[in-house]
Image 1: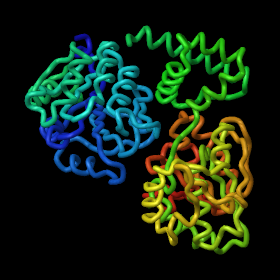
Image 2 (image 1 turned 30 degrees about the vertical axis):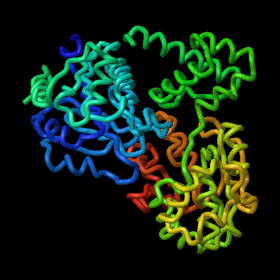
Image 3 (image 1 turned 90 degrees about the vertical axis):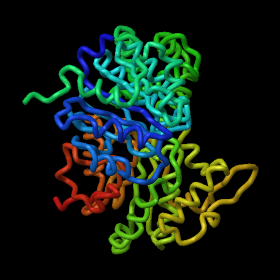
Length: 196
Length: 277
């Protein structure tokens, strides 16, 4: 796992059951967590900022919806806005697109993972959580091919196990962990804490 | 894909983009790269080229390849009245200002297949402004412009359009504006009478004068910051005094070199007004 040595960003994808799973993960991150975190959750178009607002209240980190060409900053959790794909343009900048849905989803986890893998290579930690479709599987394969660290929520504990199972099938090198273990792993990543 | 493979792919893509400029004067070199690479991968797979090199060779020597590639690089399928609250803000907050002018010019920049254009024409008709307004609808893709001019959309999209129109504060039923036939909705010819369709590039073309409203939504998200600055500068120079600029719901002028030339008019709906010079 080369990726774990020099993590630069965390990307998370989730669908059905996402809120509960993320509630076990995001608030567990220490307030001085120093990596940017990108999150794609399948949500219907329309409601602005609903998820970001929900998690902003419970997280020690800044949580907000990404804007086009948002500069990427450490310790900020960026949610993909409803009805847009979220892409990593460069290690310093995000981008949005209204390209067609992937796996019936916009935002799509695959789009985030594929572009984040290209931007960060071995420096990416990508996590597939609970969900009821195959989005994220192809993206996680890109992450592994680029040398990043791939993590999948244990299907046995996922509220919907289709997405984790599809991700494991597409990226057998992925580490399969429970939410508590994933939270622990993220908090313990080298160089992930802000210098005092 | 390993980093080395991605690097080679990126080199190939940049060579292909150079070839497009030199051969056809289509310039995508300042497009946001992450989206561009995804679109080119999709185009390469769909058009059946084994490599970007092969695609470049075909592009240079076979003129029929270009329009097919443009379909992947530029066409944006939107919805009518996408983000109804944007159109509601135009209707309730911008229109009262526009009413004070005897004649109006509206520019839909990057109109693609026309959904946003028709939304605005319908809104202006409902507000009684259509007869004093000239609409300019521009795009770089001739096929998209042709479809915009045709105003024909699949009937299964109409339900969403209708709901959006209603939520935007639409005064009449959307069905007033189209006739349905053979699974398609054909929008009324009368909606196009005051529209000028034109080939115009935000990358390379010049100012389009004295606009009262420019709507350019989810177009500049495909540009890098430098090209965004060029386009916003073009809009600033194309707007009349106190003219309005409408952007997509997740775009802003916050990072723009020209932010100082505008004030937020309806901040949540991303509608800006050009400041007094």
